[in-house]
Length: 441
Image (tube, rainbow, N blue to C red):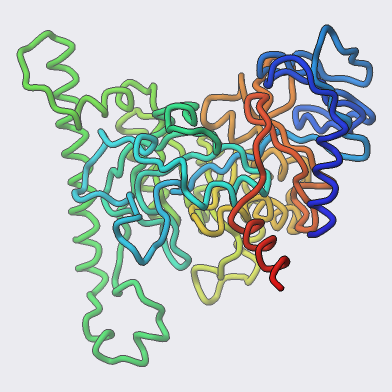
């Protein structure tokens, strides 16, 4: 770690400064465009925050800052396709957690406007090569079941950069998806089975499957009723009828028109099947998220060309009889079936581990190039921003990371980062504490 702090200042001092802050020439590096093969001893010329030229023979033009990256590697910035980073600081302090609003239906809420740009988590996540995050308005995650949310429709997930003084500066796409959780059949209280067996009082409160199924169907019907009401509002507004404005229904119009994807959190085969049927019936565009045990629905997902957002593979299987490596091999199964997918941390404190999620999938059958795409280009394509982000190609924004190796490897260090061509400070709470305690008497 001490060596890292010595190398970076030397590299920066070696750069010839000149021109605008978002224009530079990065030279003598191995460039990994992701959209194509790696280019040895190449350069990347950035003008006004966008990539102007990539290749082995790129000459400087005019007065421009030059950075020598000899022996280093250049990759596009990594994209986390689901995390409440910036919305939650300390889980045990409710006042610092701005996810999970009251009520089942809150489509009018936008995650981005609640993001705290000064969150201590943002620099930590950023330091591992992650430049972009899909900020989710509802709580997400869960290791044993489906991803959960405080409501059925939590609000609008926002695509944002991990740098900026305000949320306006961080914004990429204010409304990238509408987050919805598909109801699950819950027969227990949600705790670990071994805990319920130790405490008979908990086991006594378990409900029968029939009762749990009825409860789930009631939740599904609530979703259907809400969509029906939103469609009536949409039709009345289109017809010019005098109706009272309703922010919830207004927010649903882009979803009903197919302009905004519905990100449905569904883990198991039953919920996934029901979500697919619902999407076909309502004729809405969907992205499945938090998928854990898709079963026979994989072929249907591929046939309908529905993207999937996978969570962390570092979990135990959902069922005790499932193969131990089922979470590790799921990405390879999706790739083999022809399903486009990306990875999300669905987490705050471990969001920095995003590249290792893809690495684990690569170790269990997923081709390396696809693993890298799953945290870069695939994510950009799924969220509709591939024209500007996700790879190192001419015309795209210069969201770049400069590393001393493969970003999917734990030992690799991120030496430099650029967001829209602007250098980003890689210092975080971790590095500050390291320096502080290394300097103690």
